[in-house]
Image 1 (cartoon, rainbow, N blue to C red):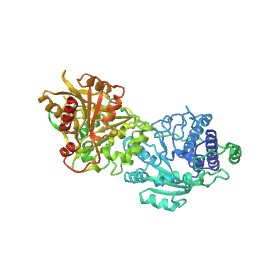
Image 2: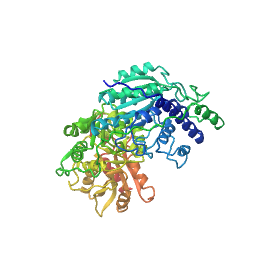
Image 3: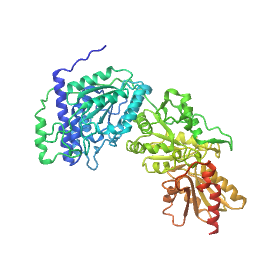
Image 4: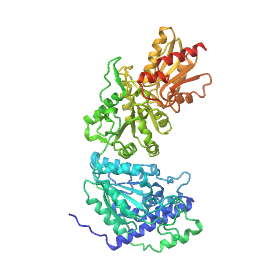
Length: 626
């Protein structure tokens, strides 16, 4: 077994000096900004010093290099010390640190990926470890590379359940290339953390989750160096260092004091504070990061294609959720960087079809949706993979904060929600996705696909794989009739007009199961010599408002009816109404689910909530008669 070689005295002193230098940068920058979290930075100064200038291997002037070790600052409010570390490493100019939190500065209050050395945005606590686990999984099982992943957490965020979801995931998959550090500085924002300095309780909890655990004095660079080395010797288990620290360490009169969270040192106390820390710096040995092993593979995730076109018979009935599984397996065949994640619903979402063909590229995340999304975000960091994350659409609501942070992270994650709406039937409202469109419409970088048949579903999957930003594909449980030719071409933001005559009275916009109802209604009305124009939006965001406006203005009544298996709030109807807000001559009628539904057959529920063909026919006739 390898023996530990303690760093020489000059190196240890240089690491102490670096820690104090990082403290000074953090205090100075936050004081200049007039806000920030200097006390949270000061508690982890020795940790950051040893991490960035002794343990981690990376190229300081090439932060995105795929061979570099990764670092996730889960306690994102300590951003100033992260910026300070990169300034001391030579990537940032030290003078830039004084632009912290100012308009136009790249140094925001919490880390964001506009900085090349930030892979995922943090600040919403409890999410960093899940993303780090995704990066580590990618490194170990997909890249098969030497880079390691480090994640620094605060003790306060360990109250978040998502942290323990990530702990369970990492131990289950034996992520021995993942090292977490918990900065146990005792104090939260408004009160002490629940365990305060009970580091042995932290140890027992982490060990119970299957992690190799080491407790250290978080201000001893000597102990930290040894603990980081020991972690490299562990096989088949992730490691965590429990670092007992003092909040505000080095700031006289502030150390371990409450009510200093998120407060800058007053400018009239700044020089005195800085001078007291400077006195401890000896200015000896120069520190430089170690160089990484260059064995990460080159990756190409451009122009991902189905490989084979859809192959369905006209009027055949196929559930869009099954078409998703078919398409995912197809694009998996054309690009080995396509991966799938699911939360123990693979036999319902049909991601099991991908697992069957490519078991080594499928990640079972179990019933832990928050962590599943975070892992997916980590997997696609630095464009290493193209992840498709699937579960029932309603369960993504549990992970909304992770999805929100994915947008801030500029993530290209693909999310697929099945079992949407009341059309799932007897399982009842707890399983019905009725808020999902509203949720994803609120995400700035999201594209929302809502395919109406298997052909359009396969093309939605292909398009999502090549679309930047967050993609959400809404799939349905019931089998629906094939309405498109296998050769049909689809585009993001381009609707399809399925029914059109010169005698159309109104326009009906529908998607998914309600598209089937709209087409049935059109056929019934046509028997009575009443004609309607039927539009399939394909994407709800971006919405093809031009086609909808053009279609509606081309009808005799200039009314548009939206029909959706979703609550009224935030869905297709509101998207169309918003798009037509500047068209005063067009009147919008919305048919959607009102109130909390219940168990019944799909047909009974569609009728009860008046989103079936019968309700569409009635609405059309009411408009004509008025």
